[in-house]
Length: 158
Image (tube, rainbow, N blue to C red):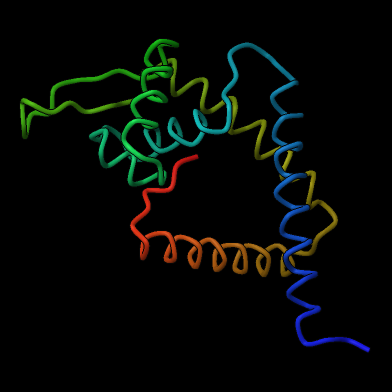
């Protein structure tokens, strides 16, 4: 006989398995090196810079849900690798803007292609309707998680 909380137990179990397997999936992609590759945090930051252009450090931290000290270290690593650079913010000369370099764009594009190809293979036997439904549900859980974290104002670090 099924108890009322059984579906939540199974949901929690599947969520935990997904997190573990997703980390392994991403790690396996990184093992297929073809030059400079990006860890998960660098991919996320560089993607934000490539897609939306120069941004202040504080806005970048907010966009990717990490605290200021974490974002500073991650951006410093991108700068050291030649993937990002700082320029003076013309609106406030005391502040700086972070932006992707030309190399940063190239490295991000290469990593993005590898990532999208792997995801495409992962769901190759799904129908378009199944993919669309999964995206909608995943977006919904991400929005819910983001709302809970924003409500606590905890600055969630990775």
